[in-house]
Amino acid sequence: MDVKYKINRLEATNSIRPLVDRHWEELRTAKARGELVGWASGPSFIFPYAMGMKCHFMAGYASYCGGIGAADELLKAAESIGELADTCSYHRLHTGMVEAILKNIPITEQAKLPMPDLMICGRYCTEQAHYSEAFYRKLGIRILPLELPFVFREKDRPRIKKFVLRQVKEIVIPTLEDVCGKPFDYARLSEILSVLKQTAAIRNKCWEFLATRPATWTLWDYAVSMAPVIYMMGDPKGIPYYENLLKELEYRHKNGIPAMAPAGEKYRIYWDGWIPWAFLGKFMRKFTPSGAVCLCGRYPWEMFADPESIDPEKPIESAVDWLYGNHGIATHLAPKGAIGKIGELIEEYSIDGMVMFSSKSCRMWNLSNLDVIDALEKKYGIPGVVIEADMIDPEMVSDSQINTRLDALFENIDGRRK
Image 1 (cartoon, helix red, strand yellow):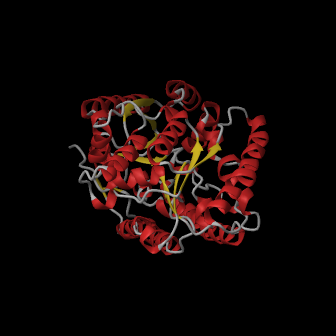
Image 2 (tube, rainbow, N blue to C red; image 1 turned 30 degrees about the vertical axis):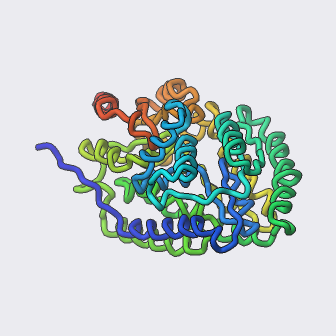
Image 3 (cartoon, helix red, strand yellow; image 1 turned 180 degrees about the vertical axis):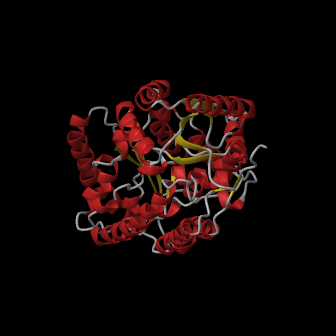
């Protein structure tokens, strides 16, 4: 008789939505309180936070809109002014939001943001430069560029790290001081990093329960729990959130309650690329009937994976280390670094198969997907598939493709087991 699998939902994750709603509400109402507002693409929002600015994080806002069901209306507003469908859906979403506000097009109230006093363009990809330039032309807002190169060769990392550190010290900080009319608040940046260090340390203890057999929770649970270590960094309320989550995971593990009922997962899956924020439920429903659980991935693991390396006494250096330290993001995004990082995750989390989520509108994450699968399959003997879709654009998500690729992956895993 076929086993009927289902996910045992966590209670602790129910409390993340009020925290996230409060964060965006404080941003939406900042101008009414006379506060300055920043927009940030790339991981640069920590610097305006230190200056007391209310700051948005591009990917965080896009994931929020996807989660509250507002993404589609914003994408349609962008389409109405000629935005191309194959450009970054995160950028299109922002363009649509701005267009809707300027032209009084009705959209979900929670999706509205105040126009920024400063936009920091932390540039991973060329589209972020085009996106910020477009807003400069449309809104006349001040743009602060921050170049963030990938690290394709390990020997280049110290040189690139030094380059980014100089930009922060010589461009980012002086610009923030000019916009805010006061000296940069290094003490506040240290406080933010101190809270972040505590939060990430507890988060890492939670990660241990993804490695258990059977797993105690899922990548999807962690995805909705990421805000305290990303755009809510420095918010003390993130600490009790993860403490409660850890307690529930410890209780589950002690009492033999797995993430997947009745007795645990059949397939342990690695997920590569962005989280499909607007379609989390859809993807859970695709994996669950087959007994498959996604447990880890490069993107969710890039957020201060090594909290011990955070030194509040060296705040600027620690902030740049997020990108260019030993566990920095910029190395893992390049194909060679990806192979090493994914290999570590395959071993640590006992992975049976890989799903490369190839976002049709984000070329940055799609570098050499098939080559990466090939290299890892040869080394670890596990199969992988590529699913082409998008993080928030429903026009790019195909149920039949998802079903076909996942069926092929599970059949391949079964064949290798036999």
